[in-house]
Length: 110
Length: 288
Image (cartoon, rainbow over all chains, first blue to last red; front, side, top):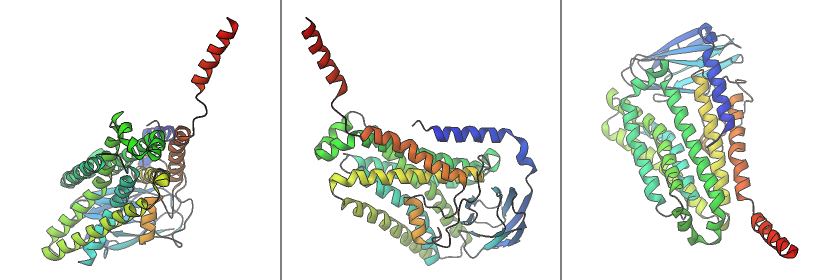
């Protein structure tokens, strides 16, 4: 199906891919171990794009999910996932492991 | 048991709603059950394969394999929904007027059936792989007995399927003369919502700009965490905190599918070529 707007978006995407600006994004990490995020609270800069690195140190896959961040990603056991986030407004953004909803945490954007 | 059921239900819900709508939208098309069923089967098989190679997918494309795969599957579904709607816009009127004319339309080419199969496959593939991973995950961690896990999974699956059957049965109560107008709108909104979801994955992979991280926040009114929020998220593409690029994709898809639909479905005014030819012949006769 011809879909011009999407093509334009993909074109924009390609342009953005070609720029090395992403390399400068700061990164923050957390690890899931025994079905808990450690650290469970991460302070991140507001108004700035950054990367969140999530390591799954458990034996079962997890699904990082956050409605407020609008992010979801499955992380197989022993793997680290990288998610691009922001720029966020100042505030608290909760996240959880959808497969083990007891595992929760939050990003605090300041 | 309940925790497993809730999670499986969440994963199945979106696929079930999509298939329910597509079943209603293709009402009267012969052999649609077989094609949609085949699509579902392929999607479920594919889910198992995806779950098996989840590690490789996550690692692919410098860690963005999952996002690219999700976005691709979603955009494929958008394309097929568009195809279906445009085909229906062209043939739907004839179908509504004399219900048995459907078969003839289909004989002109079985293409919409392929679209239906691909939509069913893509709907079951994405959420299916997550469900398989989740279930195998609990199975390996051994926190639940096999029985409680199986009961939970089946309960969640049944509840999800019930939602799909409900929307299908509800749509079939619409009089046949209006059914395809209603389903065309639903398919259109569904496609726009899936396109916006695809943008979410591309942003997550840092492949497209957000164009505004949060256009508004209506999560205090209706959160996607609630059941209603989830259902509307699938049906209308409801998003309590949309990104600019998602809004753009939503509106762009509405326009990209809606405009040709409108154009194809509008009543043809007296056939122009026929009128032109007739007047030419008349003019030629008069001149002679």
